Image (cartoon, rainbow, N blue to C red; front, side, top):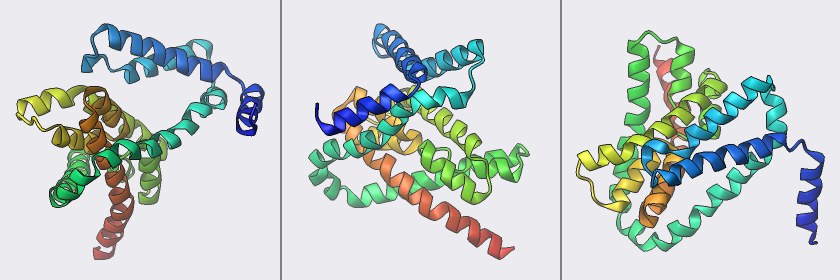
Amino acid sequence: MTEPFFALWVYLAATPLAGLTLTLVAYGAGYALYARSRFHPLANPVPIAVAIVVAALAATRTPYAAYFDGAQFVHFLLGPAVVGLAVPLAREWPRVKRLAWPIAAALAAGSVVASASAVVIAWALGASPQTIASIAPKSVTAPIAMGIAESLGGLPALAAVFAVTTGVLGAVVARFVLDALRIESWAARGFALGLAAHGIGTARAFQVHAEAGAFAGLAFGLHGLVAALLLPAVLLLLRSLH
C-alpha cells in the first residue's frame, strides 16, 4: 500500500463514518431515481439527497457538526473535482480562444444580472441589508459565496443556502428556459448554465453533453473569480458615495 493510500486509510479509520455513509447512500438513492426517470431535470439527485440527509439527521437528532465529521471527506473531494474541470476545457481551448470576446461579454452581462436582479428583488421585498448581502453572490459556488457574503456583512450560512438553492433550481429549469429561447448551441447552453447555476449546473451540463460541460466549467470558474473580486469593490464604492 502506497503512502498516500495508507494516509487516506488512517484518516477514514479514525473518523466517524456515519456521515460519509449517509451522504453516499443518499446520493446513490437520488441518482437511482434520476436514472429511473431517464435523467429528467426535475428528478435532479441533489435535492433528493439533501432531503434524505436532512430527514435522517432530524429523525436521529444528530447535530450537523457530528454529521460533518464523517461527511467532510466528500467536501474535501470538491477541490480535486473543480481542478478536474480543466481537462475537458483544455480539449475545447482552441474554440474558447476564438470566442474570447463573446465569452467576455456574456460573462459581464450574466454576472451583473445574476447579482443585481437578486439584490433589487430582495430590496423591493423589504429584505434587511444583511439578507441582501447574503443573496448578492447567490449564483456563485457556495464556498466562494460564503466568503463574499461575509466580506459584504452578510451571513455565510444563509449565503450557502441561497447558492445551493440557486444551483438546484438552475439545473432543473435551464433546459426548459433554453429550449423556449431556442438556444441550440451546446457551448452557449453550457456557459449559461455554469454562470447561472455554478457547480450544480455544471454537473448537469456534463450529463447532457461534453461540450456543454466544458463551457459550463469555464463560466463556473470565471464567474466565481469575477464575483470575488468585484462585489466587495462595488460595495466599498457604494459606501464611499454615501
